[in-house]
Image 1 (cartoon, helix red, strand yellow):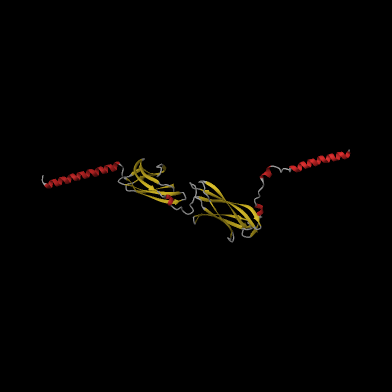
Image 2: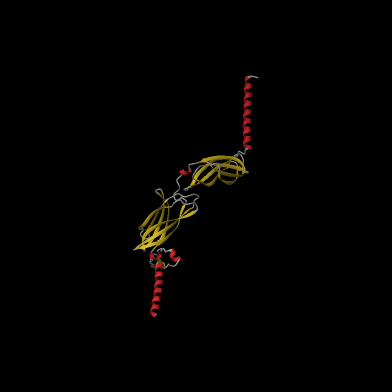
Length: 316
């Protein structure tokens, strides 16, 4: 065999070996149903709350070489510190044609504390075909969205505590509800009473929300002193550091108006604020009658006996 024949033989042998490797790879791909592919996974924050973050996990899925049926996507979220499964979400996709690409979003809500390991699993006929792993951490460094602190301002009740000259002393009871799923932070609250027509500030006071348990309501009470015979708008403003993050308002009318005939006659009715003044009554005085003075009772008895004896002696 000459040199040229040896070169050709070696070339043929290499070609056969290359073809075998490629063929084996293709067989493995088809045996593994490699027509399904996770092209990319994007994670974005939809809403940042005081203690929770709403995340969107969008997975890009592509089908190669052949059609695919009965496809679903499973998302598993593990606590990075404990390794425990924190939650899982499954979305049914259905069928994909050859060369088709779909984007499948999954929305979840996780605590800002700690970190998480996420695993995206691509299933066909409930069999795992592809998976992608992701890690997220440092969620507590995210700044909450404005007005998304989990605390809602509900009703505001007013109690007249006293009337001095032309001033009315009020107690404002503010109902604050924590609609989140964790203990709320402690925020500063500014309460202002301003006259309804001229917006003149009558009084203002600072307080705090305190920490509120999840899914509970707390009543925060403050005192306000305003001139009587006026109507007021009471603003409740929650501050986070130096930024207003929540605002609510209520009304109190110490001099309401009643419309007798629309757009024609207005009758002003004056309310006597003293009628609404809270009066404290001693509970003991209501439950039991007043006791008489013991000393007075004994003296009265002695005087009666002496009187009877004196009358009897004169008769003798």
